[in-house]
Length: 164
Image (tube, rainbow, N blue to C red; front, side, top):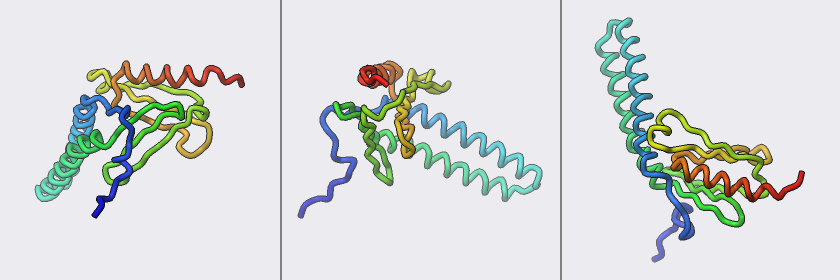
C-alpha cells in the first residue's frame, strides 16, 4: 500500500527553512499577547469582583499561550522557501497546506521589514508585492536579516531589465 504524499512533502533539494530564532521570536510575541490578554482580563475580573471570572480568564489565556507556543515550532517545521528561474516558491501550513509561487515577471517591488523582536534576533520579513489583486503581497517572515536582503536583491536584479 502506498503512503499518501502531502503537498508540503514535495519540495526540491535547494529548499531552505526560516532561521531557527524565528521560533523564539514568535514564542515571545505569543507570550506578550497572552500577558496583555491576562492583564485586560484581570482588570475586568477586578471590576466584576469575581474570582471565578479571573480563573476562567486565566485558564483561557494559558490555553491560548500554549497553543501559540506549540504553533510557533510547528509553523517553523512546515515553512520552506526556494528561489528558481521561475520565481520564489513558499510552502507553509500546519493544518492547511499551501504552496505559493511568486513569478519573477509579476514582481512589482519588495520590502524588508524588522520589528523590535526581529531586530533583537537579527531577523526580518521579506514582503514581495506582485501585479494583480489576489495575493498582491506575499510575506515571508522569520528570515535572517542578511538572507532577506540577499533574496530581495536577487529578486530586484531580475526585474531591472524590464523597461516600462
